Length: 272
Image (cartoon, rainbow, N blue to C red; front, side, top):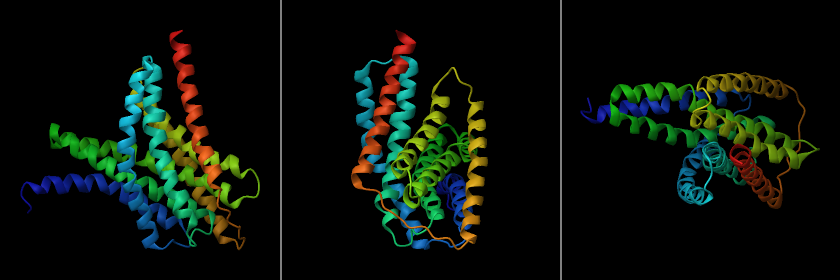
């Protein structure tokens, strides 16, 4: 129907479909759905994060060249700092500096919805690039990449968004340990994302563990949504408190420092 452009359209469809399905599922978990316009803006902001991430990656990879790290510590750096930290930090900023200030962000479930929306915004571009890039090796290869990523990378990004929202809801709606939960709202998704990438990067770890990792956290995510849906059925209301900018900056800085120190610890332990 569209000539040579039909392949492009088909592959784009394969790349976008898993994102759309997960997005729809999460949106429908909310008993009091967020305004579609705001959720769409959050999704688009997630897409927009690909631009600053692309610039920062150049600097981070260039910095890696100056460190002279061993194989395993380089894998850790690429997994946890170059990929996970940069990507999750940008999604974190979308939620903190845009979504959290919305009047419609007024209950814990909203943190889950917006977290997934921002994460899937980035994921749809990344998935589209991988699938289209694989088409250089043939249509069947591109289809295989789309199929595999629909059960691995795309759910991984969605789960990172779920757990970012899960800890953020405690940082915003709980009365105690808010700073600690704010820290976890960034640190935990970075660790989850980084561990996933490390399994892929490391030749000493079987890729099979990716599926175990995803299944475990998928089950946990299902229970999180179920619990928050039950909370929505009650009439209990919580007061929202927006974290201070100084606390947000400290959380980002602390997360990076922990990762960087861990990276050097691995380098020392493996190659001393």
